[in-house]
Image (cartoon, rainbow, N blue to C red; front, side, top):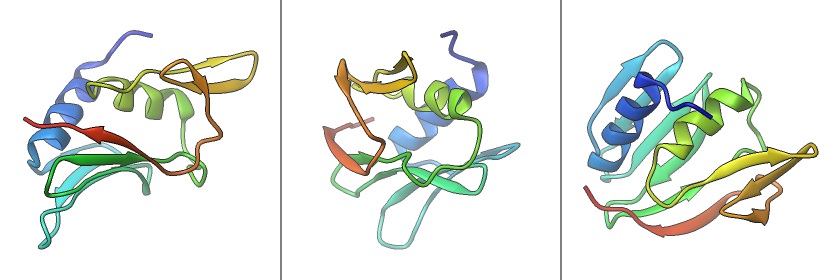
Length: 105
């Protein structure tokens, strides 16, 4: 899957905790230092102030390919669909919220 310019920009902003807005993609950091990744009015990832990230697509009601493109631009995340099954970093994943580790700018 090709990584779009917006996906790369959004991922960079997310990892760096920098506000970013383009179309239906919105990255912002709240007063507690938590960075939120919003796509199509759905939260798909958060980055805690300590760099720990959490992603989830189980409540996502937008374009799944766009969501995958955005998230795949974040280091340590590899999403794909094979035979109608979602995979995260090579393992079957049901899309429920999961902590993945630490990402620093």
